[in-house]
Image 1: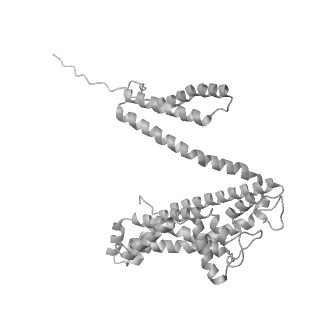
Image 2: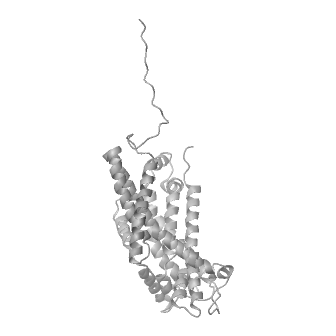
Image 3: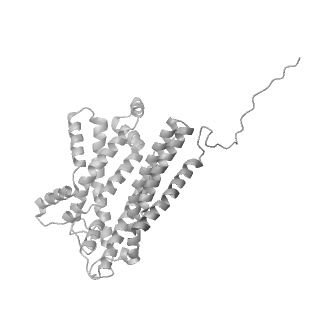
Length: 365
C-alpha cells in the first residue's frame, strides 16, 4: 500500500483583493472619496441655481469629505473590523485638517505672487524712492535696510542666546540663577513687538535725546525678540545630545569647555541652525518696532549708526497706507515688497536646511 503525501498548495499571491477579503483594496478609499464628491456636486449646483448664488466650492468639499468619512468608517468596520475602521477615520480627519490648514497658506502665497509680480522688475531692485512721485521707483533702499538691520540683530542675539542655552544645559542645572533665567526667557517670549520697539527707543533716547532714529535701534529691538527664540530652540537641541557622548569625552581627559565646543555643539548644530533661522524669520517681517526705532526714508542708507533706515515691512506699510497719484503704483510697490520679503525668508530657510545637512553628524560610518 502506498501512501500519497499531499502538501497544501500555496495561495495565489496575485489574486486581487475585493471588498470581502478582510482588507479593503487600495483603490476603495479614493473611489469612495470621488463618489462622495460626485454625489454632492449636483446637490450644491441645484441649490446655487435655485437661490441665484455662486456655487459654494468650500461647502461642497466639506460636505463631500464628511460623507466620505462616514462611508469609509462604515465599510471598513464591516470588512476589516472596528480597529481598522477607527484608524481609517482618524487618518481621514487628520488629512482633512492638514488640507484645511494648507488653504490659507496657499491662498496667501498665490495672492502675493499674483499681485506682486506686476512690479517685480529690474527697476524695483535697482532704484530707491528718492525724488520719485507716482509711478516708477523701487525698493533697493528697503532691501538694504532689511538685510543690514536683520544681520545686526542676528549678530547681537545669536551669541547671547546660544551662550545662555549652553549655561542653562551644561552649567546651571538645579541652580537658582538658572531657574531665574528660564523664567525671564519665558516672559520675553510673550513680549509684544511694540514693547520691544519702545524699549529700544527709550534706551537710545537716554543717550541721544528724544526723536532719534537709527538702524541700530531697530536691530536692538529685533534682537530683544530673537533672543528668547534662540535660547529656547538651542536649549532643546542641546538637551537632545546623549550624555554618553559627554561622558566618553570626559573619560578621555577632555575638559568640559572643549567637550562642549567639539562634541556637543557639532552634534546639535543642525537643530540650532534651524532654530536660529526660525528666529530670523520671526522678526524679519516686524513693522511696529521698526517704525518707532528705524523710521522710514526714501534714500539708501548703509550706516546703521547714522540716520533713518527703510525696511521692507515699513516700506510695504507706508506704500499701501499713504497712496498718492496714481494709487495703483503705490499698491503695486507694496505687493512687490511683500513678495520680496517672502522670497528672502524662503531663501534663509533653504540656507538653514543646507547648513543643517552639511554640518549635521554623519551616521552609518
